Length: 106
Image (tube, rainbow, N blue to C red):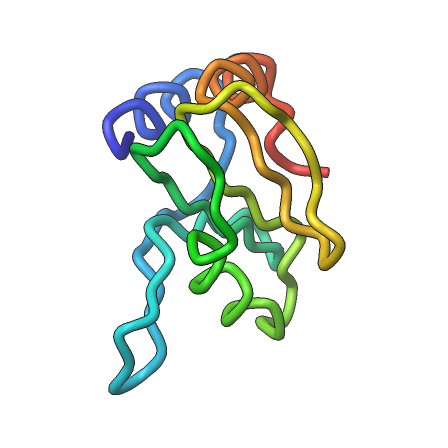
């Protein structure tokens, strides 16, 4: 996924920086934190076809980050929806389409 993000960024300038996020001394993490200007996009990627709320642990923990514009969980399932606390759950195909169309950011 990191290579895919970087490849799209070379032609579309989707983000300024990409990083991994984890609070100090914790087993909670978010796979990718994209930064563009003063805004952040948190991205968690799971190789699972069935959605489970446990997949949201990192995305829920990062919710208070200043400048956080969107939280996205990408999985191999087929259902696209938004959780009650605002996390976007996207199938891999939907994520690819949004990435190609430069629509990751709200």
